[in-house]
Image (cartoon, rainbow, N blue to C red):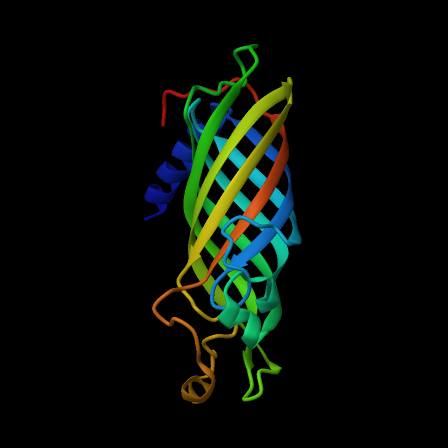
Length: 230
C-alpha cells in the first residue's frame, strides 16, 4: 500500500511539473428566480449576485471550473403576468450561497500562450449545491420562517462569450440557468413533512430554477502548458 501511494504522488508530481494555465477572478451580475412564486420571466435579474471563480485550463478547448456565488433570490407575485398570482400576492426573499464545479467547453481554441487575441463562445455544466433558508406560507399567506436551512443540488446550464482583453486578463459575459432537484426554495413545498399537507401549493411536479446573468473578470497565471497528458 505504501508503494501505491508513492506511485500516485509521483504521477501527480509529474503532471504538476507540466505547468498549466490557471485563472482566478470575480463574478458580478444579477439573479432571478423561476418557480411557483413571482415572475414567470426566464431572464429578468432583480437582485445582485457576486462571487469568485477559479479555472484550471487543461487544454485550449476545455477547463475545470469552480465558482462560489452569493445572491438573494426574490419572488413577488405582483410582478407576474399571471392574474392568479397577482391576486394571491405572495412574496419571498431567500439568501443563497452556491458552489459549482464542472467543465467549461469553448467553441474555438482558446490558447492563452499563442500571443494572439482570443475570443470564443463557451458552454459550462457540472453540478451545483446551494444552501438556502427554509420557510412556508401560512393559512393567510403570511411568510413564516422555519429557522432551518437545506441544500439544493442542481445542474448548471451556462452559455457565455469570453475575450482576452490583455495578456493576463479575460473578460466574459454569461447567462446561466440552474435546474435544481428541489421545490423548496420558494416555500411552496415546506421542508418539514408535518407541514406539507397543510401548506404545500403550486405545481409539485416542477422543481425550482434560478438564473445568474453577469460578467466575469479573471487573471491568468502559469507557465506555457503541455496539453499532451490530458
